[in-house]
Every structure is written in structure tokens, then in C-alpha cells.
Length: 424
Image 1: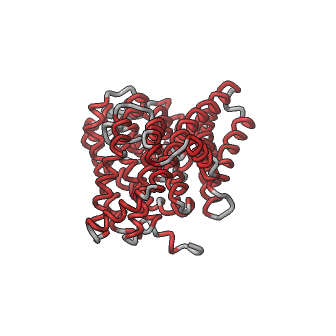
Image 2 (image 1 turned 90 degrees about the horizontal axis):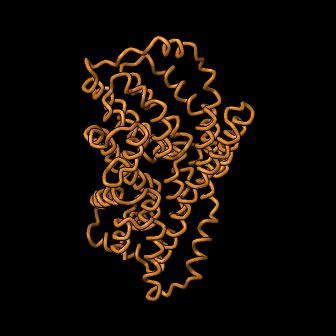
Image 3 (image 1 turned 90 degrees about the vertical axis):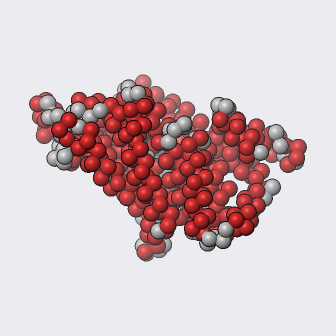
């Protein structure tokens, strides 16, 4: 049945529909009724943690419409303009800040690409490198909390979302450091003479005229969201509501967007959230059917009969998840593979929080890996760059991701560092 599911996805059947068809085609054998299909999907969508997803999406859209994204870019420029190959570092820095707010990789690529991509091209970077860096840094939108895939994994597997957010902090910063190293090296290769072109006079005046204080409203949002979560003041869902309300109040009080733009933000957030929630509803139905048929338990037993070595098991899991990430949409892959493999990982004594970070990083690498490679296609569209030149450059950032994945997989303390904190 899983083979049929993959075939449906490969031929272009919408993700939610493919999962629903997988259930309905086996409904008689599994004794599944239409009432079960409707009720299970509805019960899943009424799960309180999932409310964080549309709220974080709304917050991201309001930030873009209200000019908070531009403030983040301006702050990054002021902070990093002195570095060598500074515009690339600015893209990494701005993506880090944007990722700590939106929780969405694609939103990070689109907003930061529009803001910084044209300037990188003017500074002498080849188009392929600009697109590759934009696509790669978009991964920070899910590696840094709040992360929508981690919310999905935590809700589906039944582990603490707050602990998942803490666990991904150190891996996220490792990826940032590796991306910086790759950019330092590659900029010397791709730039004529190894140096960026000088900024224009108007740009220099604008940079020095801008004040760091103007970025305070934008920088307060991640402090408010993450500080509230980690201090125990907010749940992740409540923090998402606070983020959306904060962005809305900023727009209304500062009048940084028209009523038409405000309405457009709500419509776009609703459409994006509806697509994700549709997938959640039917993948949850699919996973419930697999659980009733004890498929995860059978996979765990098969894995234990294959090897009793957790190192070998994790190697096989990484290879399988990397392959799944190449072909399946992120939310669907997380909701399918998390509950499917978590029981097997538990049999090997692997911490479920550690395993969740492994699952999400593997699947997110698929955003840079054809044929799906969502981030590459978005970066290509936003920056008006052909895909092939991007592929020649993105391989270096993929290598950095693989190094980080290997470290996290076999050094679990990187993900479980938060156990040193009081109360954890």
C-alpha cells in the first residue's frame, strides 16, 4: 500500500488526496468506514498544537506586508556590512532572524530573496550562487524554532514541542556556522578578484543614516515568541497567537500597510494554512490506519531482526529519509515517517526528541535536493535565475548539511544539550 502511495505522489496526485486514496483503496480489508475517515480527520485538525501553524504563517505574512522583514534586512546590513563578502553574510544573518519568526522555509526563501538577491547580483555574484545561497539559507526557517515541521512531528508522535524547539537550537547554529564557512570560501572563488563590487554612494549614505533602533520592533518578535515559550509563559500555540497579534498591532499603530495589503496577508496565510491542514488531516488518517494494522510495530520488529546495532539502524534511517525528502512534500513526509519510524527508534533506545531532530533535518535537506527541491524552485522564481547554474553551487551547502546531519545523528548530546538546563 505504501508503494501505491508513492506512485500516486510521483504521478502528481495532490498529497492529501493521495493519502485519502491510500485509505479508501484498502477500506474493505481494513474495515474502515466513511464515518471513520471524516471523524478521524476532524479530530486531528481539532488538536490544539496544530493551531500554531496558521498563526505562525499569519505572523510571517503580516511581517512582510508591514515592513518588519525590511527592518530585519536593514539591521543585518548595519551589523555585517564590515565583513568580507558582506552581502552573502547579510543573507545568512537575515535568514537566521526571519527563520526565528516564521517557522517556514519557503517563506524565508521568498522574503529574503526578494530583499537581498538583487543586491547580491549588483555586487558581482554569479546568478547561480545567489540562488543557491538563498535556497540553502531558507533551511534556517525550519532548523531554528519556531519550526512548523517540528510542531507537526511533536503533535503526531506525542513529544514536547518546547523540548523539540530547544533541541534544534544547537544544530541550527552549527548549520549557520558551516554556511558561513562555505560562503567565505566560495565567495573567493565566484567573485571577480575575490571581492564584491563597492556599494553605490546612495546605498552607503542610507546604510549609515539608518539607526539600529529602527530594527527594535522586528527584533522584539523572536525575543517575545521564544522567550515566552522557553520561560513557560506561553505554549507554542499561544506564542504563535502573540506573534500574529504583535505584527498586526505594529501595522495598525504604525500604519505601515494599507487595508488592502492587510486583507491580502490574511488571505495568503489562510490559503497556505488550508493546504497544510488538508495534508495533516489525511496523513493522520493514514497513520491511524497503519497503527490499527500494527505496521509501525512490524517495521520495528523487522528492523530489530535486520540489525541490533543502533548505529547501523540510524544509517539506514538517514538514507531512507533523505530519499523520501527528495520526493515528498515536507509536511506529508514528516507526518508519515515520524510516527512510522519512532516506535522502531524507541526499540533501539534512541531518545524521541533526538530522533525527531534527525527526521526533520533529513526531510528538510530534500528542499535542496531534486527532483522536489522546493527551495531551489522558489529561489529560482524569486531571483529570476535558471535552475542548472544553481545546482552547481548548492552542492557545497548540501555537503555542509550532511556534515551537520552526521554530527547530530551520532553525537546525540548536540540535540539533547538542553538536559543541562534547570527543569529539563
